[in-house]
Length: 131
Image (cartoon, rainbow, N blue to C red):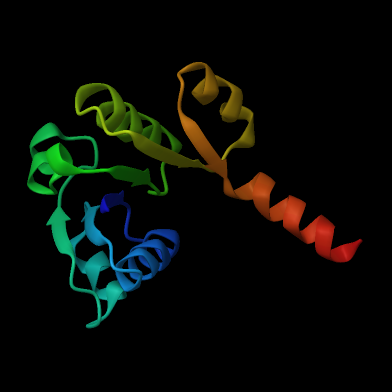
């Protein structure tokens, strides 16, 4: 599978390394070139520096051939916009956006976006482990 991950922070790095190790073609986009250092020397995917919702940046990252797209930057707004561009403009079938503010989930779902709220998910996991 050809996957584009926008955001090369902790979640993006873990996802990129995991998907790459599983044999998928992984392309990572981040606005900060230094962020790619987090991937280490074992990662062999494409690295593209630029704004995650910019059309030309996404084309350089291979979005026209992408099977999946994950928006995991530190900005809810950037993730939502990038996910919508991937889904609506480039017809990527599998698109997921990470959100920090769980109150935004309903809005993003009305837009038809699949989301993962790390705050809600984390709280649910901690509660499950405690009880």
